[in-house]
Image (tube, rainbow, N blue to C red; front, side):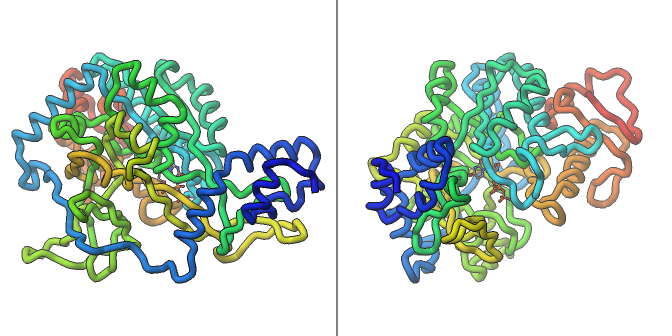
Length: 474
Ligand code: UTP
């Protein structure tokens, strides 16, 4: 076999199989494989293999001393209305001062949805079929206008979808946003390994590499220079949300205000779990720190526990909406001093090649991917905070092609939201018992992107718009 220092390094680490077909490859393909291999931190792979793949390593999460985390309830749920008002005012001041940027993690593979293309390019709105990216772009633009400070928007992509994402924005002229304020960067990749820790090839000349999880966003923000850019622009707070959730308030003044007033380094929104089996992570405390315990890690008996009042004890579900302090991100990204985001193992079907180099499409899991989760940064944050939100205002993700969290459920939740806003202004809208209107409706974020901005726009509209099938408020 050809000799190369990198190939020797892989051989010494017991990963020589990565170059098993090297000699058969054309020079260009050889160069490409060497570049992919250079991305891999062999010591990290060895550490993860030892810690996550050791036989009998199914012990599960450490549950010692776990308790439900406290959170700030909404005023409608018994929370302190004056404190919420104060938080909102503080958040609005931060937005007017240009201290906040929006951040979308869009590097996932979206396998469950099965859509061919970056998930952000998936059409979601009921009438106009706007894409997820367009919905966020318009919300961000409208908030910038409302607070007199155009927002910066950071978008994390993956190697797989980066070019297609940027092209999509270019084709749509950044949906009216100033191009200089939209910043794309790629997240890191990790190699998949078989159950004995050997790095898998995807083809004879490519390694099975996949995105390193949404937790990789913290490293990627630092590596890409995004944090330095924020610093130069006087931005100290990042509003984090996922690409699949068009209901999200991209910048929510009350949430920003709670975060800022508490001096929190990382804050999160929770919704009360709808039923014990609901697949949400749980906000908990452990050893005096805030943690999220995944649904798969919390025994079902605990998920079903109730308080004397009959409420779920582990009630606070995580919906992946966070507020992060810039320098906190830097600290976690750099690691050291006891701070390190752990990797998690996910057993997957990983297309690969056999010993003869023939493609293999496995029918069951044949290996492991390693991913970091952003909520694992919470235990390292000072003054972390959880606040309640209502699902109807913040959460209806598109995860699956059908059934729960699908394009259909998301469309209906958008329709219900528009109906609530309209009814809140006294408009008559016919709807079923769930609040879903009989008519097709849509409110452009440029008209109103939350209850307050909608109310302001409505009041300016004279005479008030008539609600009929196909109404589009823009
Ligand atoms: P999901 O957990 O829904 O994963 O990501 P996914 O890869 O998008 O979808 P499936 O599981 O293959 O169906 C939640 C959010 O985190 C982002 C996704 O883009 C989505 O916004 N994410 C996930 C990343 O940015 N990078 C990752 O490596 C993983």
